Image 1: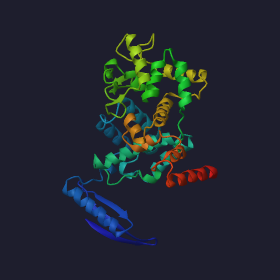
Image 2 (image 1 turned 90 degrees about the horizontal axis):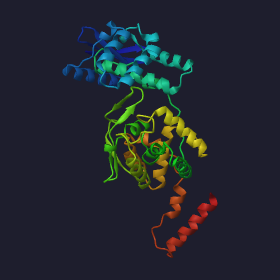
Image 3 (image 1 turned 60 degrees about the vertical axis):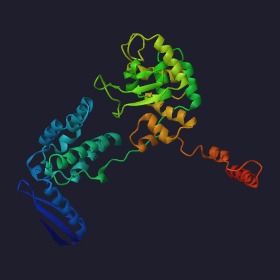
Image 4 (image 1 turned 30 degrees about the vertical axis):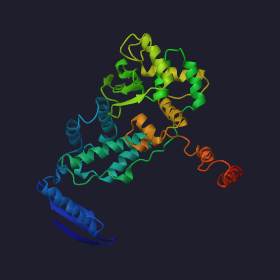
Length: 372
């Protein structure tokens, strides 16, 4: 193992060089002595723990590696997602680097894949999916298989998404929609979407045994995958959780239970279970006829956050309700940030009415109102 200083017209750089387990050298060039020493320490630790990467990536093509990787990680994703991974690789990655040796794939080739997608008019979201797959492929080549020492999928290439404000209904619009849906075939499905923010797959998979009428709880234990055409014994985030049933939804559930003819909570007439595409179409029709903005099924989930925050829920409350694992996900469900601050400011009181401090406060609020 050695660190070698390299002088060129652009200045000095440093090369770290070590022989891998397969007899080939692992090399890396960095810009500073400190970076070189840090990388050297990392390689020493890996060698001491028998996990030192090799340069075997130069002996296997990307296509050959994908077959190896796809088999090795088959239990890390659902069948539907694995089919998507296979399709994404065949359509976007294979044509560019399929026959190139794994160890010869560079950041510029990764950029070429993403740029070709952009030139074909594919959205940033689609390019981000490919970036994620590439990142996983090369990360596993390093950490799982020991075929590479570094990954060419660098952060600078990550496509940037434009986050759009999601469509949702305010309280008045929710009232109109629920009033219109009252007594109609999809009333309960919409109620579960509005009052609890359940995803369609969770509504489809909800059974009467998951509803605790005594404690007024619904246990979210399953979901239905429309891509795999099967039930899963866990929701999307793989976390079983329970939610309290609001009184108005509870009344709907009691009525539905008395008329139930199967184990599923939502089971429209002439259907074995709630059909996603029919439900989506009916929801949009109900919106039109109720004279409210047309939203898709996930718009109901965003409307739930509006409903709960209007009744005093915090962002942390929403995270628990939706069982989000990350606050950044919950942030997407918090709409009109800061719009309630003026109302809250007018309600803040620490001193009793009639005191000098309270009188000064009233004057301050008047000035605030006149300035806005």
